Amino acid sequence: MDTPAALQKPAGRYRWTIVALLFAATAINYIDRQMIGVLKPTLSKEFAWSESDYATIVFWFQVAYAIGYLGFGRVVDRVGARVGYALAIVVWTVSHMAHGLATGLTSFALARFGLGIGESGNFPAGIRAVTDWFPQKERAFAIGLFNAGANVGAIITPLLVPALVLWFDWRVAFYVTGIFGVLWLIAWWTIYRHPAQHARVTPEELAWIRQDPADPAEPIGWGRLLQKRETWAYAIGKFLIDPIWWFFLFWLPGYLFERYDLDLKSFGLPLAAIYLISDGGSIAGGWMSSRLIKAGRTPNFARKATMLFWALCVLPIFFAQSIASVWGAVLVIGLATAAHQAFSANLYTLPSDLFPRAAVGSVIGIGGTVGAIGGMLMAKFTGYILDATHSYQLLFAICASAYLLALLAVHLLTPRLEPVRI
Image 1: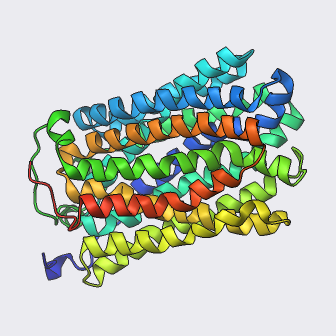
Image 2: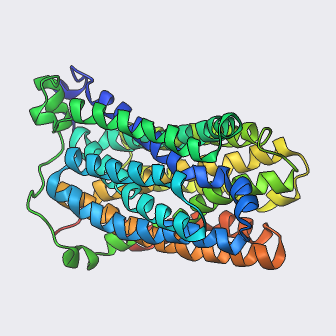
C-alpha cells in the first residue's frame, strides 16, 4: 500500500518516548534475570552446587517462563499493555528481591520460579505496545531499540553486581537492584496510555500510527491460532533460538570465569563488552529490515534477508573454545550475541506482520512458551554435558547451527509472509 503524501513526514514523535520506557523495562528485566549467572561462581562455592544443581535452578525459571508467557500473552490481549506490563513488573520485582532471602537450592528455585512468571510478561506487553504505537514499517526498528535494553541490562549487571557484592554481600545486591523495578513502575503508570487516549499525541502522529489497514478487534482463541502454520513458524523459530540466548545469559559468566581464570573483579569487563557488541546487533537488525521495507522491498524479503545475514554471523562461535585470548573470545561471542539480537528483533516482528492486533499478544505468548520449553531442555542438557565432559564444544556447535535451522523453519511454514486470514 502506498503511503499518502501527508503521512511521509509525521508531525510528532511521542511514540519514541514509549520505546524509551520499554527499553528501560527490558534493561531492568535483564539485570534481574542475569544476576544468577553473574553470581554463579559465588553461589556455587557457598552452596556447593554442581553444574546440574545450577541447571535445576535455571530449569525452574524456564518452567515458570513457559507458563507465564502463555498466560501473559492472553492477559495483555484482554487488558492491554498498560495494566499487563504493570502486573508483570510487580510480580518479577517482588520475586527478584526474594532471592536475597534464599538459603539453598530449593528456595533459589522458588524465587526463580516467581521471577520467571513475572518476567514472561515483558515481551508480550512490550510488543503489544509497539503494535499499538507504530505502523508496520517502523515496528522492527522500534522492537530492535527496546530489545537493546536487554544488552544494556546485561552490560550493567557484571559491572554493578560484583561491586555490590564486594561492598556489601550478594543478598544486598538483590535488594538494591529491586529498587529499579519500583521506580520504573511509577514512571510507566504515570506516562503510558493508548495513543488514541494520550494528550501528547498529535492528530498527525495518530494518523501516522494508524496508516495500516484496520484489522479485527475481537479476541481470537488459542484454538484458532494453533491451527495456523504462521503461529508455528514463529513458535518453532523461538524453540530453536531462545535456548541459545538462555545459554549465553546463564552460562557465559561461568565460562569466562573458568576458561580464562578470571575472578569477580576481572570478568565483568569482558562480559560487559560482549553485551555492548550485542546492543549494536539489536538496533542494526531492526534497522536493516525496516530500511529494506522503506526502500520498496516486501516484508517477506526484508525480514528473511536480514535474518539470513545475521544467522551466518553466528557461525564463527563454533570455534570459540579454541580461542586462547579472552578478548579474541569476546569478539567472536559478541558477534554471535549481536547476531542473536538482530535475528530475534525480526522474529519478534513476525506476529505483528502476520496477525491482527487482537491476536499479537497470544501468538507472542505461544511462541515464548515454546521457546521456554526449548530453554528447559537446553538447561538440563547443558548441566549434563558440562558435568560429564567439562567441555563447551558441543554446546557452541549447537549455537552455531540454530539460527539457520530457525530461518529454514520460518520460510517453509510462511514462504510469502502474508497476513493470516482468521
